Image (cartoon, rainbow, N blue to C red; front, side, top):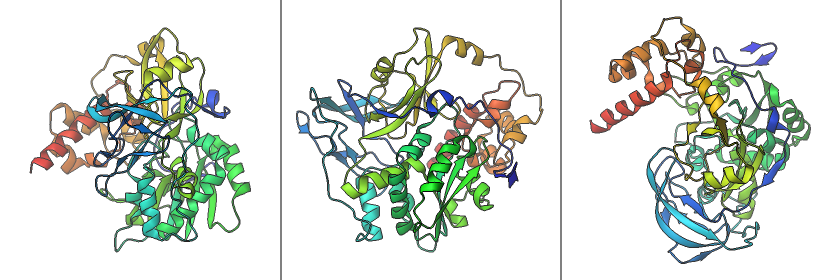
Amino acid sequence: MRLLGLKTFRHGVHPPELKDETSGLAIRQFPFAPVLVVPLVQHLGKPSLPEVREGQEVTRGQRIARPDGFLSVSMHAPASAVVRRIGLAPSIGGRMVPSVYLEPFPGSTQEVMEGKPCQLETATKDEIIAAVQDAGVVGLGGAAFPTHVKLAIPEGKTVDTLIINGVECEPCLTTDHRVMLEQSDDLFRGMRYLLEVVGAERAILGVEANKRDAFEHLRDNLPADLPATVELLQVKYPQGAEKMLITALLGREVPSGGLPLDVHALCVNVATTAEIGRLLPHGRGIQERVITITGPAVKRKGNYRIPIGTPLRFLLEAVGVDDAVDRVFVGGPMMGASASSLDIPITKGASGVVAFTDVESERTHRQVYPCIRCGYCVDACPIVLDPSRLGLLALSGEHRRMADEHNLMDCFECGSCSFVCPSHIPLVQHFRVAKAAVRKARAAQ
């Protein structure tokens, strides 16, 4: 589908972008906190297994936890430090999760130790997949799904198009924007690794029109021997969702309950791709990531390369926040999660930190009214569900019916329905509760 000459998808919404304050700010290195807390659960799948002991000295970049099976990844030390404790720490989801507490050495260097390189020219597909797992690479767009699992194409499935997701449609966030501008060589190298592994004929790098400088930079510097194109997309939310991106770029629709592989496509986030290109040639693992720190309550907004495990409290103190700070989101304001504690650490899946004052909070704490069946949510839903009906069924506790008759599990919780609802009904929250109940019931069976 094309609108105003640019590719896009049907439905969706247009929330305020709120990117201007950080989109022009170059990535800066963040200092080490006095204590870094590295959760062993930073990805979908099984927690990593610690391979260090309390009191042990570790070097920045050293592996401190190994994968526990295929659906798991390695963890690496974000700083040269002493392992002070291995125990539980709070997570953004509210659970206590096993973690490694590190105390960085005073004056710890930002240099990273070299490992065993995975050279594209000589490595097999299996070796590349293993290197991605050992590097601890997960989806850096927020999903945190282990990337090596996505790259292991099941027998009988094929990929003809690799899609690199540089959309970053979430309001406030500009990390992917800066990565595309500042790490284009890493990005192109990462694309070569991915194309080699999945066997795709071509790659498409999708960029929204509000990042035209990144689009032009990538288009003008695209290597001639790389079978790839850079496509400009209309600005719309949630265009960064892989199903929407596949529809916009390829005109293919992922079936209900299906995966991109069902339409011979594979989507990988642009920052994830750049990390693969940055880490694998040196045999390194992820020990930091680029994060946008912004919001009305933040004094020194910017894009920072932040060590994994940095406590939220230290991060906010370092950039400075208004005394009236009231709510802090990890991720963006549409799909991010409100932090219940400032003691939670930054993880691989955290693409942004957005802090609001009590003024903005008052504007969003609005009276909830009954559904008036206006249909705005139906027009907004990018996968054409009926959020109004689903919301009414959720209130009556008919969770199984929501899933069996109205495709609840296809909802990826983008928040478009809640954004447009004139009755201020927290539809996404209702759906999350219902989906959790359905998963629990199915697991019990």
